[in-house]
Image (cartoon, rainbow, N blue to C red; front, side, top):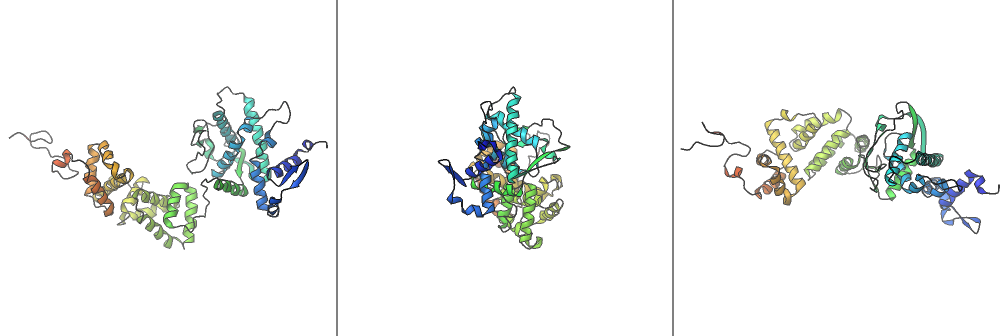
Amino acid sequence: MRSVDALPRLNLVFELAREARLVRVVKGRVHAVGKAAGDLKDPLALWRRAFDAVFGMRRQLLGAKSGWHTESMLFDAYEDVLPDILNTLYSLPHPMPWHRLRDSVDHAYRGRFRLGGTAPRMWFDDAHRDLRVVLDLLDELGAVERLVGPADPVYQFLPLSAGADDPAPRNPAGSPTLTGPTGGLVPDTGEPSDGPVELIRLTALGTWAVRARLLDAGRDAPLIGELAHAPAAGLLGTLAEHYDSDSARLELDQWVQAHDGPERAFPLLLDAVRTMPYRTRGQAMLETLCAALPEGEGDRFALPLRRDPQLAPLAIGVLVNRGLLAPENLTEAESLVMVAESMVQYLEATGPARFGDAIRTQGADFREALDVALTAPHPDHAALQDLRDAAARLPRTSTARTGRRPGTTARPTRGGKPGRGRRR
């Protein structure tokens, strides 16, 4: 062979080793890099070097090989698109169909290069070819695997949560996802998704490596089981903010097992809700706990809390939100408590300094609801006192000067209009 280009696979391995800083070329001779000697004895560390090297191999993989060959759009966007693809695969619970991955990347090209609807089809075909080259290398490395089967129905549309200029867009699960020019939904191209299609997913090794890169970049990448020994409040707070329902269920199950089963674990979780000083967050924690339990079990868990002397306001809110309790089925005392709870949470959201302005913008009905809340039998006396203090700083209204009981309306006098007496 007159040139290493005649041995493309050997050349690829050599370029990979050089990009991984295992070897270097000095005056035409290849030398081992001394600092990498330790990783040569550690297969996992050596593999991680090779995986990380792929992110720097744009020119070796996709560069022009001759005068007539030109680089594709993927060549220009490689450093952004490759991490985005792998982060998306990391965030998805099901293998991704090739045509959905391809179309989503095309959507990103249109935003990045400001392409209109008349962009030549050849540009996209060249980018698809190069994307296949990259996936082939990742497949051979063992970072991704490709299989054939039916696509999950979730891929009828792929949600995009941000525009192309957002450096770290996230999907509802909290993980990075592919971006489009304006966000929204990437429409399906119409290719069949109900029959067998090519599917792509990360391997266990690839998942480990992508997570490590996310953590190295300071991104959030939760791992199921890492909260098994976290405090109860920390567990529920993290599940509420960063986990989807399936992941939350798995994480909660491992936490319960690590705390000697449900009989010991659930009282700890409820105590964490009871002691949470912020009621808005406490309700979110309780709702997360109920949602993370298996179907039906969360409802059975929440229903008895309606009679809990301390958790009742939060529990009733959760039951109403989950459709297990209709507002018209509340008792009179529960209705008063829920009015007070809504006002307490409203004060918590606005803060004492802005509470007065917020109340004034809501109108007379809202002020009457505040008056009702002040007399409600709410179990959180400290929160209710804060509400009374905030209400005392409000300017007096005509409602306050009438001497009527809060929450009542004026009774019409005989023969007159409502609220007015006849002149004597």
